[in-house]
Image: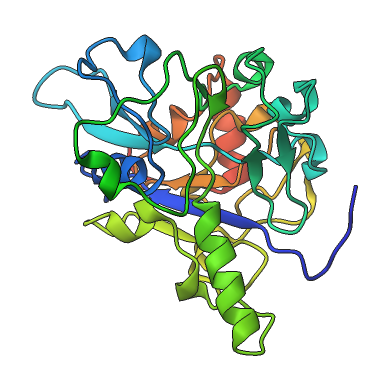
Length: 285
């Protein structure tokens, strides 16, 4: 474990009550990161979508039916105890995926990957995708590819990078101005800037002046109910997916609706009330 008081911990919070499921985040992500697509995208088993939008429902009949949409990028897990041992990083035999202790971002190094897909099996969020084919772009579209992101070849795994190239550009800009501080506005992911509803907030979870920190209010101490969980939100409306696993994702979700928060994990009978009490939640159904 590496301790660095100046280290960033980039993450995001997605307000599911604002998300309309329009898919703009997914489109902007594909455009920004040169994510390949097929002529026929109806078979989702071999589609690549770094940002995937899921549709949730409370399973109640009309007129009590409610729907929510959940965008899911890579969760950039910190691993048990938030020590940087992400599930995918721990199993990669080629060190083709790594945890950045200076940013908290889980990277993917395509030239090292040989396609064993252990990382895909280890990821509990299904956020990693295998390239079954070399990318084929419609005629003329190659001129519109982002020059800052290399297209991936057949036989490697790829995933959301929190638009790491934007972090590099922001860092270079800060250095050029004689500062080692990256302003919050200078490093924002493509999905964050594209969301028309303003549902996605991105920034440094370690920086109290950043909006994402102010919304999440991450607890730096281990959860008393599960010492593997660190960074649990002190906002009762904020939750993480499958938090009990102790993967410590840096993507948080927020909702006023209890049924939405409850869908973040698979609670057995009686478990939700205990968790809800810890959150201090008292929201409407």
